[in-house]
Length: 176
Image (cartoon, rainbow, N blue to C red):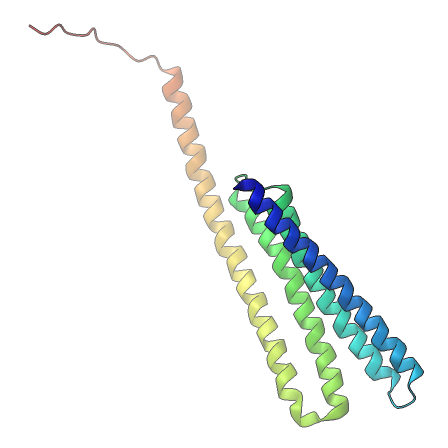
């Protein structure tokens, strides 16, 4: 089952990597068409390419996360601190991608119809809320790790003391 899990996650991460490369290719193709077409402005083409590349980076990061955490490491047990760092790194990339995409959409919308700026603004607010949620998660999980770490250390000290202290054995009684 472990091999099947690794194969499935490996195939998924490879597919996501290929899709990310495809998005970059589409962005470059779109830019090339904009350069050759006199009807389209260069600024719009650049904003479109930025959008493609930003989404490609986010998709690539998901592929990298799947490969590193599920394929290479497998299902080995990780500490809470390591899981928190991994999740934080992953979410940070997604948050940055959402912020950048929201900024691209703000610029595109401002050029076309200012009345529609409410939608990219909502996307920016959503990104801020995810960032605040990540900060809260970091704070709470670090506090729990600290407490659990203290409890674990106290338990280890108690185990060491019990191992050093000789225990008195009482002879077994014979049943009459």
